[in-house]
Amino acid sequence: MRNQFEEALHFRHACKLFDAAKKITEEDLHFILDAGRMAPSSFGMEPWEFWVVQDGSLKEQMRPLCWNQPQITTCSDLVVLLSRKNLRSTNPYVVEQFRPRGELFEKYLQTYHDFIDARSDEEIDCWSGKQVYIASAFIMLGAASIEIDSCPIEGFDKEKLEALLKVDTENFEIQHLIALGYRAKEQQPRSRRPFEEVVKFL
Ligand SMILES: Cc1cc2nc3c(=O)[nH]c(=O)nc-3n(C[C@H](O)[C@H](O)[C@H](O)COP(=O)(O)O)c2cc1C
Image (tube, rainbow, N blue to C red; front, side, top):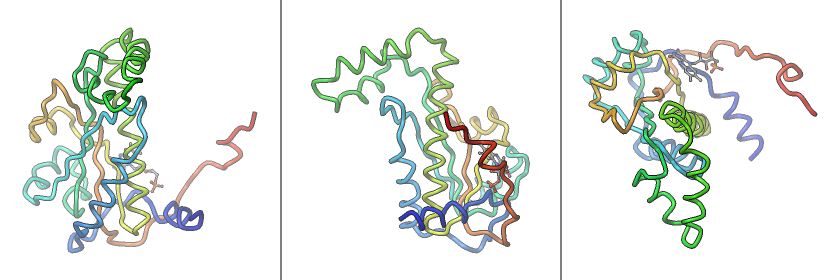
């Protein structure tokens, strides 16, 4: 398992150009998206939705709003990751997320209230957005584990993209995109700061 994880780590890179002729099977795509669904989130809030763009003409419309990046139109599937907004403890979505806790329902809701409600709207939306990045890591590593390439994408015009995709911006916002598919050429050598510089043992 360790070796397989290591292989996935080394396989994954931010793929800048996909082979547009190669499509991900439905089964593989389900596996990858399910890895995102299984990701942890603070309080188990799962404050995310994953929208999968498969339609070529929609990808064409999205590309100019995404810094004209070729990944948008060459990928097989383009995942739009959205976070929920307004997640105060009175939001019915929040209340329902705590329902499966059974007898601990009230306790969870109270702890969540103490944790969240004193924050500003912006801080709460930011907290929600951070959870989505964890799901992203799961999606990208899930993809790499079955030798499917990915590219996380933050380079886009948020307002215009939300308008194009008819996002209900009262309740959701786009955090980023992940293009999925098969690399068109070999990846560039990876560059990382040394382990000793990044990791501190206390
Ligand atoms: C949140 C996030 C947003 C990113 N946005 C873009 C992007 O818009 N376009 C792009 O080509 N790469 C994007 N990247 C990829 C990074 O440039 C890349 O991960 C980094 O250079 C390290 O390279 P590697 O992933 O191949 O190891 C993004 C990465 C992250 C984590």
